[in-house]
Length: 109
Image (cartoon, rainbow, N blue to C red):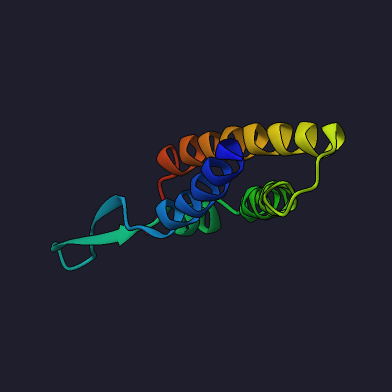
């Protein structure tokens, strides 16, 4: 039961962090002025044309949340527990991959 609650909280936090403006881009414009932009990991994925990673994150998180809700509702099946643990771990792994890709993405202006 505790693992199910933690899984739901982790998946919600992942989507919150992916929408926060964590990165700053700086570019010198043609008139010589420097301009700064704030961007989120989702915007970085879009810039790198790797939005498919976000779709994988959505799918894995949805599976994790659904199985967690099933376990909280009283389903006592070892298969559901195994799927929940695997999907939660996969969700965290995909999130780490997304953050690495977002960090190494530098848009061209």
